[in-house]
Image (cartoon, rainbow, N blue to C red):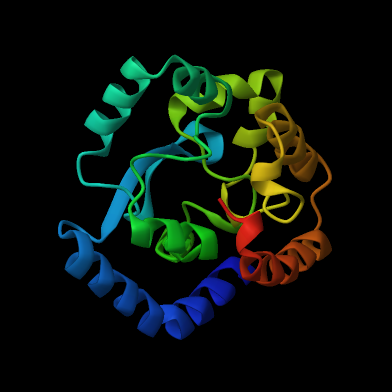
Length: 196
């Protein structure tokens, strides 16, 4: 009930912002404004996770070329599944990611029951392998729009620390903790240096 209530209210309040973002993407970069990617959800069920598109339209090709020509980048990608300076991200995409506005379409995933307002961040199938024995904890809950990782360091920590935090969240879950994380998320989003 909390997920549905929070998501409905947030979706109504964010609708003007979401429309503006979609139009800006169309005007500045063309192509679709919303991007979906397969993620792993509760009990291993896969779902299409929505985000505003922050990368160039041919991002898969750009990634392959970048990794092939840059060994250091390939190592960084292998360790973290992301880059500090991703060549695929557009100028507007940087702004959307820093403000976390790119994740607003995931409110629809929450309404569809595929995600929760709070939980571990959704991962792609290949990425779940990196959770090792902690994958069991991840699969016990729905991925979240926000989570403990977002409000305790986000990109400032390495991937094993993220996994540990996600696992701890699941094992120590409480409704009160979810409320605190939601409130802390509001402040974390305002700090652009803490966002991806």
